[in-house]
Amino acid sequence: MGFIFYKYQGTGNDFVMVDNREGGFPKDDTDFIGGLCDRRFGVGADGLILLEDEPGYDFRMVYYNADGNESTMCGNGGRCIVAFAGFLGIIKNDTRFMAVDGVHRATLGDGKVKLQMTDVDRVDVFDNYVFLDTGSPHHVQEVQEIDRFDVKLQGAKLRYGKYGKAGSNINFVSKVDDAVFKVRTYERGVEDETFSCGTGVTAVAIAMHRTGKTKGNTVTLQTPGGVLRVYFDEEGGQYRNIFLEGPAKKVFRGEVDRV
Ligand SMILES: N[C@@H](CCC[C@H](N)C(=O)O)C(=O)O
Image (cartoon, rainbow, N blue to C red; front, side):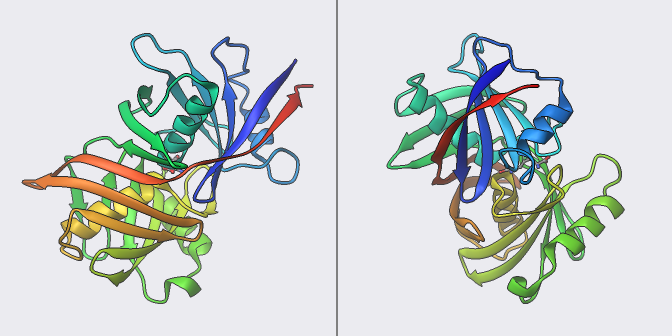
């Protein structure tokens, strides 16, 4: 069986994207999905995303990490699937779709997607890190000299050592100025640093606000793959109307045979 796929990227977080509205994609074949995401033996991507029908919504997003396992929410993937839905003609400039963490709204225009993220009610602040769930679990830790920091080594230590079998994504952050932060992320399921992580920068923006490192409601995040912006409202320690904004781009189209 062969099928058409598209490759998308959002600030360098890249995804194999498949229109599965007619079904037929081997959703339980972990080795096949992991193989497609492999950068040597496959197409190469941080994850694979299926666009499916969902009654009452524009579509459903189904997300798999590069290891082939279905996972929790992907913010950059969410932005990319909105661009993909626009390309397929399913939506025009705005959408309401279903994902693993619930309903998302988004707007699309000028090559950018602004995606509403899930509300955050709980932020756990510890001595030298913050933990929160922005659709996916995130550890946020400030570091010195972030450009020279060994994200893969230190990220893997925390991901496996601290968070057990379920694991967590691990974000390292350095303040640039009151509303700008540099972020590098070790992603669970990719088991490496990625160029950018959407739920990760969202977690960083909220963690920096919660710990008083930024006072405003708009935070700019510089990642190795580009710049993202996070907007939110906060009341009584609860975060609402959280939006993640940045570029999302189609890179190429291809066809794969499943042997
Ligand atoms: N790239 C992501 C996060 C994807 C999910 C993550 N790897 C996990 O399993 O938690 C993003 O942009 O949010």
